[in-house]
Image 1 (tube, one colour):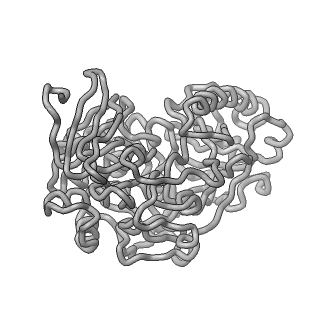
Image 2 (cartoon, helix red, strand yellow):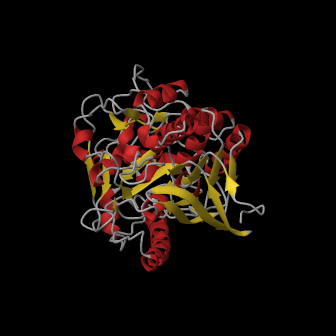
Length: 456
């Protein structure tokens, strides 16, 4: 029986209310379908709001082409309007062309307000538990929340969980990590009472001690500068943290900084014992790094801890195998596809499993690549779409496609496709890709970049 004493019926069910799921839900509603979204946390936004990921990466290709638009851009515009983001700015670390800093608390409100306005039905603090199958098709799903267990059914489903939990439960195959090891997990924390000008001055006087792409000329004027390095001081301190550098971004609040430097190298997101160990270990590292900041880093002498992120930052869980498996070599040549429904532009950014180092490769051609519709279609389940961090991609391509702005673009495409399929009475796998592309463009999505933004 359902939450209201009956089985819930709708057009599309989305598992996951992170940025991917929210964009999917809004796209589906605007394309004409009814939606039920289930989110396991007590708030929307996923890693963006719960793990305190500083910025939505990235709305631009490495050469400045605007590659993400529509609903993702609308969310940022609404956030800018309430003082929750400066909008797109240059990445002072230089890894991406742009970063888009966000205030996690204001973003939570923007997301729920948007879903409410669009008439999306959603349940927070609600977990997906199982899927009832009819052959290879998902017939219904089961969930649990404060009311107990319930069932819901729809002709189409979207796995935007970040974990690929619905697809895996439905029987779709997946990969995880490289040689059995996923990228490390990170617990971000914030400190205040930081003299950011003093830290920037140190960087300007010790340029060889920072990431080689750092844009030093923008450090003093950026509304949210980031720094990656302090290599000499980090090495001298001889921390037990298996990381090769200090990485932080100033938040939108002057003297506050988000520290992205804890590291759990042997993280297994599918082992509850390991996950628990990793959360405990990351918290120990947090306090070790806090003491390091006070003792070693200019400008942090009087810093105080203001909190740890509610969620640990998890870079990868399951990569569902789809009709096409996006490959690292596709990104290295900036490959475009006839059936692409989203674009990505973040570099291949691998926090090396079992190591303290980072592996990185730039996107080829114009600095961005296409994500085929086939990457959103799992091999086995015809009425399911996948989007976001569980997209069909190999370890290398996933290290780029996993980031927030790219995931939002995938969510927008998946929501539109699911709605078209329901309205036409066909499976998502049977859609004409041109119909999906037209719907994405109608929503404001960008598939033919013709604008280069000068953010200097």
